[in-house]
Length: 366
Ligand SMILES: Nc1ncnc2c1ncn2[C@@H]1O[C@H](COP(=O)(O)OP(=O)(O)O)[C@@H](O)[C@H]1O
Ligand SMILES: N[C@@H](CCC(=O)OP(=O)(O)O)C(=O)O
Image 1 (cartoon, rainbow, N blue to C red):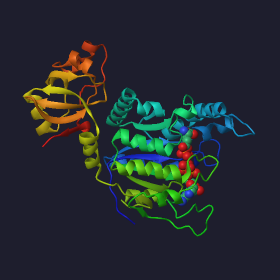
Image 2 (cartoon, protein in one colour):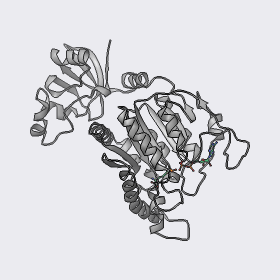
Image 3 (cartoon, rainbow, N blue to C red):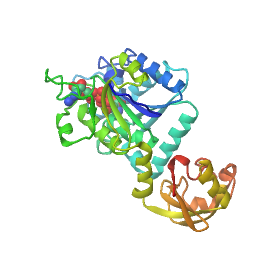
Image 4 (cartoon, protein in one colour):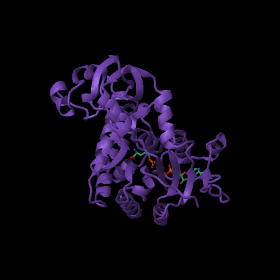
């Protein structure tokens, strides 16, 4: 088995683990997962859950003897979501926080920034974010559609270094083991090639959505961004003891580069700069020497037209010193430049947090 380490993980739990009988929630498979989450947090690690199961958990309440319509599924999700959240909350003595998102939310810059800030705040306050797709409002064309890809997007938004997909199977096999008795488990994937996609089939149960294919898509998105991805069997409690011992009891998709490096490259080279923020000597020194976030008090001038979530160049004495994602628009920064963070609300009438560029979203130029 491979050894692995992580600091911030998104853990995705499939419907088959939440509602193993295809209807109503059960904690049959959740106790070892909860123990793992509790132990990991106690060790200083951060966890975000992506939990499926709202449709499966609500199924018993909307009995139909045909393939459910979209509206029927949405009604099941509306009922099941509460049960699923309550089921998780019973296992923890810290707060669980419901985060429901759609594809649109993840691709609209302002809403993306809001999700990011909310997750950061929840983790700061030791809550356990539990993300699911907002099935009741998302029409098919505007859905992520499966929680494997939703978990990958969540890992990207949250700046996680690891994605753990807990399914009802030990990992990726050379073929779907439900159909091919000779299939063998693949322990490690270095590169996701078309051959890997070719062996990944559809869902194995009536409650599962994407099968192995969407798990490979999720691993592909994540590993390209420096996020190692694991597929493990969430039905097997010993899997979580192994994970806690730093072992990988399933399939590991290796990150293509270190998470820090991938993020740095993305910030530095992929994102187009939309404006400039000139900072004073104190702010420049704090960014450089103390690893600080940029606060409004250190801002002297702002130029360009940018929205919250856009990349900006940070300059000191006219020279670029850093690049980062602004959490306020240029228009807002014109109003709050030079003021203390505590005054943001009185200046704008609202606030989106005390920092203008968070340290996690900042690269310093050498
Ligand atoms: N190559 C493969 N290796 C492993 N499982 C596969 C493969 N191809 C298809 N599958 C199917 O994918 C299923 C897991 O996906 P899914 O049913 O969507 O569960 P989940 O609810 O965990 O997302 C497995 O039970 C298995 O039948
Ligand atoms: N949002 C849906 C989950 C869809 C989904 O991807 O399910 P699964 O394949 O079990 O992870 C629900 O909560 O029922």
